[in-house]
Image (cartoon, rainbow, N blue to C red; front, side, top):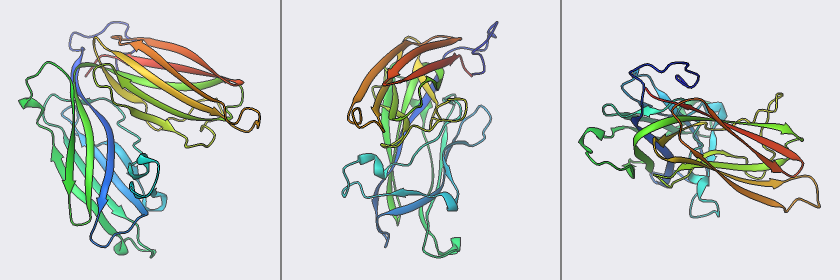
Length: 276
């Protein structure tokens, strides 16, 4: 949101090539590991803006995510890490570098008894790509204990979009799956999936999204997909609401819209910003 509010944009600001990360998945395990897995550690990306870690996933040992086998369940996302970043757009001025440090928590109280799930570094050579259209790819990382998949896209001449949601009326007594995608890369970024539980809301009514930053091509559109199910009221418990909100990319300022979910009113705001 560096340039969202202006009032005057500097000459250096503008659309940039960026990276969108869709998912990090544990596709297969080996080396004595067994499902389910209690996973902790970090997945981050460094770019040329400041060379600091831009975290996609970060959990301590006492707050693991439990992953179940993709072959043994009905929900494919149960083998996906719950990404909480990036905190800002990932720039593709030069080669960005992924850093993956993941462990599986053992039965003991000491981290010395834990297994390494994946310890790897890889870069994306964006400089060699001379095409004019955005595209997505999957990087596969194999190690003694796992095979990981990282799905991401090279998004051409893009704008940063920061997404907020707030309940302005009602109790928020509903589950919510909120995803976003751009018209150039029609693959979903999961912003929030409450998985059948009440949507997480703070005291001010603000919905606590898992992720909030995505990128959209300068001439493209951001599509927000809302899937909500009213909870608590037996007469409405099976009522599912699905909506799409299409927002053209903007160089700055904000876009707003509202959804009615049962007795609750959900307000969306997207803050647009040029880069870097």
